[in-house]
Length: 184
Image 1 (cartoon, rainbow, N blue to C red):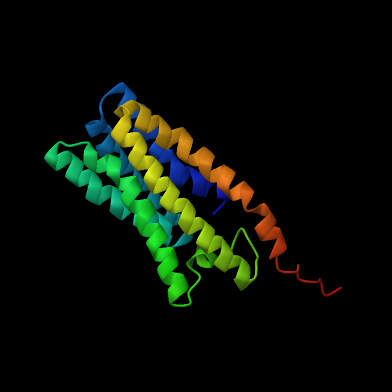
Image 2: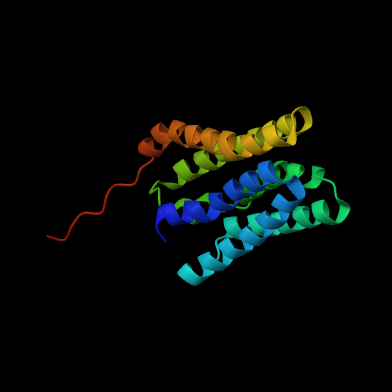
């Protein structure tokens, strides 16, 4: 799947969620998000014959917390979802290191070709970044309006993620695997 399409399937539902939220309310937007995340997962399956663990994890989280939001009519649940999701991802990454598994490699090997030491270092950094994102989400949703929180999710999180990944360039270059030599 092209990178642009993967990003559209991952970030498109969040963009639509924000637009629906500012034009209607968080409850309607939550229902729309649940539907769009489901369609994104189905599209990923149709295109690749599988749904990545990251998309599947996000889908389950959106359905669990979205359902709680809608059934209990409490927007807190959809707002805490990113903090819980980011925290869980950090725990999963660290657990993987503890059992000798480099989960990030299976997610990003199409984008980065680095040695195991590079994957371990990136995993620790990514786990720390997820803890940071979880704490930042908590601070924003507890101290600002729902609209500000939605804007933070739509603009702040992607910008911080891009900045974080760009900051990993020296690590990725230092641990880059040599390019395969052509046979001719």
